Image 1 (cartoon, helix red, strand yellow):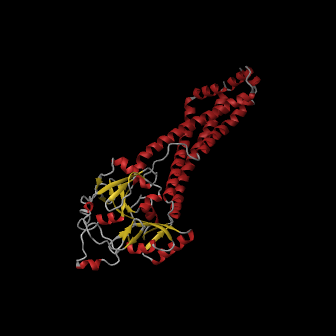
Image 2 (cartoon, helix red, strand yellow):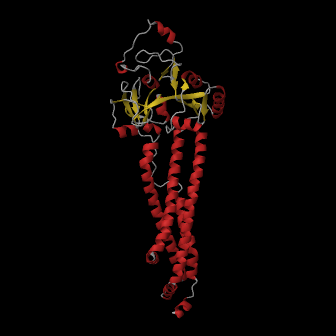
Image 3 (cartoon, helix red, strand yellow):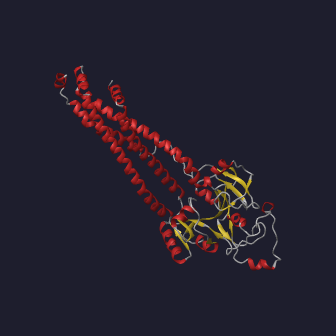
Amino acid sequence: MLGKLAIKNIIYKPLSSALCVCLLLFGVGIISSLLIVQNHIEQKFQRNTKNVDLVLGAKGSPLQLVLSSIYHLDSPVGNISLAEANEIMNHENVEEAIPLAYGDSYNGYRILGTTPNYVEKYEGGVVEGRIFSQSMEAIIGYEVAIKNNLTIGQQFVGTHGEDVGGSVHKDNPYTIVGILGQTNTIIDRLILTDIESVWAVHLPEDGVKGMHDHVHHHLHDDETFAENHDHVHSFDHSHDQFHSHSHDSDGKVITAGSHELTAVLLKCKSNSSALGLQALINQESNMQAIIPNAVVSRLFYMLGMGASTIRFIAIGIMGLAGFSVFFILINRLRERKFELALLRSVGYKPTELFFLLMLEGLSLALIGYILGWILSRVGIFIINGQAQDDFNLKFTLEWVDGEIWVLVSTLLIGCVSALIPAISAMKMDISSLLSKK
């Protein structure tokens, strides 16, 4: 009965009730949206830096190096010498090294030259086909396959750079040999091949023509062979290290001096060894080594300042909503004194009048929260349309950690705002009020 009366009283003054609800729903909507975005980004960033102690790359912006090599959200800082990188990859403190080489894309999806260890790092697996085993074979991420309707056996050509519409390597097609399962990590949006393929595509004079026919030229009788054969390196997938004496499929010699890497993801044997290796690289080489978690923490700190400002604004809006509920209930109490006195005269107890006003405050707060929660999900749904295409971010529409405190805070605002009017209603002198009538 009290609940029905509370709802009728809210509907009786629709404009003032709508003002309270609107203030609450905007406050709740902003805070809930921030919680979803912040929680998702933090989890995604932390998941992608798993088992990466150092990122080795060219000197430049540490943030750009991390964003480009781990999250693939930025252009690379530059390239590093294969010979110099090899020394670090074979360092005694390095437990695992995953080299990366890129420069091309397909329909906006980056083509990354790496090793099968890169897939294992993200706990990915081939759900159809197999891992690449020779040049110009590629495996594609879950999203790449879905968005481009690609299947096993199809061929595609890369576009130079990361923008759609660039020059196309039409003479050097990749063949899809595997499709990865969904991992909700960056590999969902990548096309993976071996490093030799990335190198070979960029060789002069279409260096990978005829690669799929496995044409090998025997250059042992060529006088230039001996001159170019010194310190030649290639990547052996079975040993995860670079070794000597390798050629591409056209017999062109791949040398440490003529080929480069974009970055290397390093896992060290201990935290102390990672710090020592970082200092060594930064001080005594032309490269830089960055601890990705440190860079990401600084990034979150900077983003957190902006998020905190927005959160304080949202809290201020909810505070204004609380004052609105308070003034509305106070004004209604003055207008309804005779009505409340009549309720007392027909048998309603003072505590029931107290709970009636409290229910009105709580009802306004609950309606505001529900509409605010819906508003946040509509906003996130709209954001997802752009964020998924541009940044591989798809925010959840489900309940997230922290939203329980938004609900509790909203209901508390309703209770506190209604408390003084409810106490006043409970203490009314009904005999004097009725006698004046």
